[in-house]
Each structure stands twice: as structure tokens, then as C-alpha cells.
Length: 103
Picture (tube, rainbow, N blue to C red):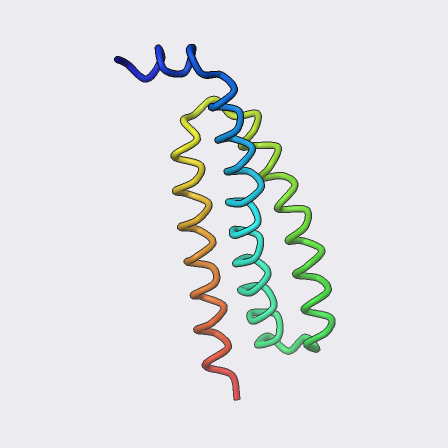
């Protein structure tokens, strides 16, 4: 069976995979973005609580944009899962690395 025949037979499963990728994968990606953003802004000299607020506000907007983009997208949801979870892990690792270099 081809992927298109599976998609046409199970549209609810495809929608559930997209919504799951948007909510969970978007959360992981936004969390990594917030961690990296806070660390980079603190390292650049911004006060911690200001960096926390700005990164969290931008992270919330990013999560919403990712959720809408994944649900409305036409690609296979597996790519969204892979990109969002991998990107979130890389951003979290960057934030952790930057924090480890701070005094």
C-alpha cells in the first residue's frame, strides 16, 4: 500500500498525528527555544527575569505558530515530529551549553 492510500483511509488518524505533533512537538520546540533564548540573553547582559519574560513571551508565540503550521501543513506528520523534537533537543542543548559557560 502506498502512503496516499493510507492517508485517504484514515483521515482522523492523520489529523490526530498532526495535532499531536503541533501540541507536543511544538511544546518541546518552544521549551528549547525558551531555554536557549534565556541563556543567550542573560549571557549578553540582560537581567535574568527580563530575559525569562521575553523568551517566554516569544516562546508562546512560537508555539502557537508551530501548532497552526503543523496542523495546516500538507507534509507527512512524521517529518513534523522529527523536526520539532530534534530541533527542541538541539535548542535545549544549546541553552545548557551557554549556561555552563556562565560564571
